[in-house]
Length: 119
Image (cartoon, rainbow, N blue to C red):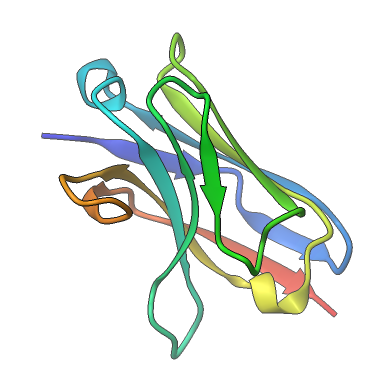
């Protein structure tokens, strides 16, 4: 059973920064790419960022490109999402996921962490 535990969410003002963390069991974390998604109230869950198993090679949604940065520590089995220049439209529950057999699809999900950006 994969366990993904997110942390780091909170309330921040427009233009501020937050760093989210997601820790997984070693076996599952090291098996493949890791993803971040988000879901705003009343909207579908959407892809945010991806990082390859090696940590070299990232991919972002256009809406966050240039503002967010995904990274991973394969020793600590943790993936991070550094979020800068936050906007009210970034308000959502953020989920990390272990990528499944298809690119950008999740095999396993964390429980989510709430990010709220005030105007």
